[in-house]
Length: 366
Image (cartoon, rainbow, N blue to C red; front, side, top):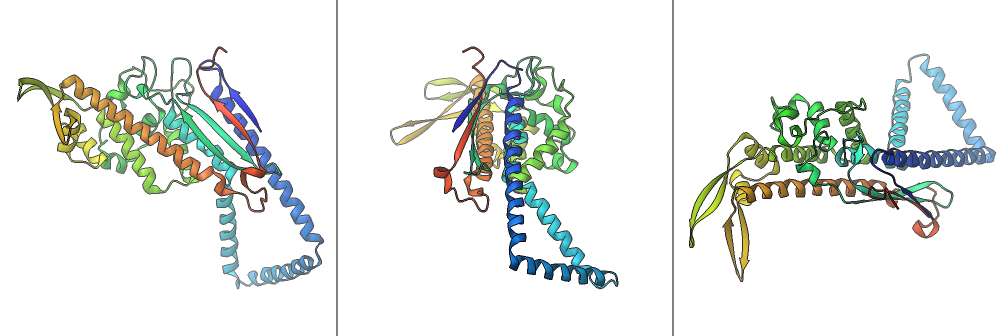
């Protein structure tokens, strides 16, 4: 059992180095699987019964080949194609591929452009990679730390918010734009994205291409279409929520007049409520009042404009944090030990080894 600490200042290449390490482990694992399959194949060829069965299969294949010449075996071609397709699918979702495909998803939701790095990880992650006794990759688990939620509200000048917003805004289809309230809107129409004066990437990466890569990775990991659509709804809801505005007002209470606020009924407010699955009145009440429990009673006290804006920001950060945690949990479900390779007799963790990879900022100087 070993651990690898990937450290360095911003832009030093921590994220890329971690991906190189994962690729190396996956390559070794696939090589071991290939060698084991070759040994198993050679062992089968030496078995008499298998040899006789192979002769029968050869005869059947020859007969089928002759029949195809007369157009009498169209179904065999279909079956062979299905088998090939099945092999492709199996290859696409092997544990090595799933571990690697976690990167585009986590980078979309957890990375952003900074002044020094166009793909800077704004969270720390520890990847526990487990191997069987023969050295094959049997599973992994990802733990994340310190997601920079403040970036969601206040990205610095010259930097960007998280990649997923720009990727989706560039790649969203016409149907998605209509359903999610984005028709006629662009990056410049959202306060969460247009406040830094920076919307592009300097490394030549196309946001639309990265969005499609993220969607492919989600399918490989095992996200169903409904889950993917729900995640995109929440991402869009956060963008609309950032455009919600409030108006100051005065409200009379037992102590006289007090400062209060009202949520403006704008397109963004309606879109946010719809995408979150709540009514406009419920959203407005949640953002303009706070609940105070006094004994067995709950008193609703009004918030002023500044407090309501802070409540709206808190809602966005809490929602995005929950989305990120859900994605990490979903990825871990896919790459955990339940996907043991067939033929592994290591008996779980007790008979296996693990290598931990820690990729985290903050260790620039030891």
